[in-house]
Length: 140
Image 1 (cartoon, rainbow, N blue to C red):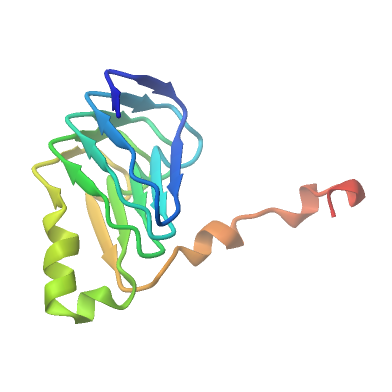
Image 2 (image 1 turned 30 degrees about the horizontal axis):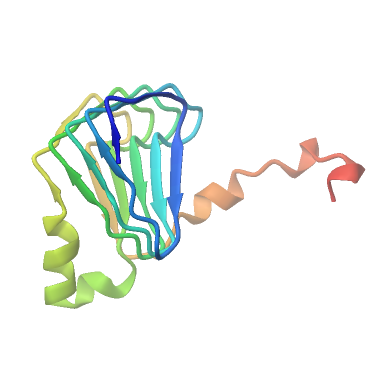
């Protein structure tokens, strides 16, 4: 459990047994996403500020299902919250569980919109943005 932490940059939460609890934190200033929950991860982000990221404030994909509640998510270049549901949106019980975990957030001035819900598993554009021209032969 992390309380009252300040993160200059972003956080990635990945894995089935991953369950971080972030309360009253400030996460700001990454070139990518502020917080990325992925690969069946859980956990929570509550009563925190997520601001001024180059992409989404919070990205939830690859079957992650964290609790994101009572936060201020603002001034990000992408969406405030970008949520890739996979096939769960077709199952009413799963959809209620997933969407019930995102509540009471203040979403303001995010360039990509406040919240986006997509029935894909992950963001393919994230991989397409990779610039192959800047790879050195030693990187392969």
